[in-house]
View (cartoon, rainbow, N blue to C red):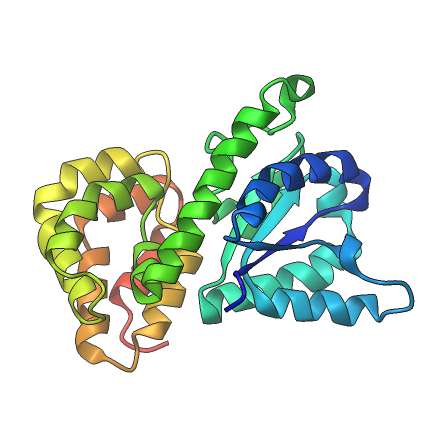
Length: 263
């Protein structure tokens, strides 16, 4: 078995930052955990657009190195991002936006609906990159967790992407007890244990509203199983989560997911 592919989407104007990211990801590649794909690998004379498309098709994780150059790129915004977001919605691919440099990313709709890194949205290379290594190390650790979790139990990884990383940790113990790898038990256990864990969830999600794109992907994957779909929607109806969605200005979209019978 080949290690899972991590696809790097970046602007060639941010070559220095990309190389520093690759140095950190290289630790995982050396350990045999991932295979990094970056467009430097395209050989002369090759159909570069086709090779990028194939690489995106193989990716388990896509890291977006977001900057003004990135957001201004016609190819990235017109070709790469639609492809990756579609795979995220249909296949559960993890799209991992990293705010590299100061830019107006909060004006980009699909980005504002995602959990960016660093968590406070401050650029990795702020202050001349003084803390870049610290941020990149944390990002690489999180990618390693995604890869290792997915290899152990893909169903569980997809389900847990409904929640922020902190909320996942808060529920870890009860999920272990419920044998969370069993497809049908995960949402039911989440719903039952939410009664006990609600205060923890409120705190954990207070700065990270639910990711609507991720929630929709999980609900769509459960449509063929009415019981599973019902339990997922019950969990989404928890008042604490609804309040968070309201505060984030996502109430209408969130209620559509939590209460809709048809799509």
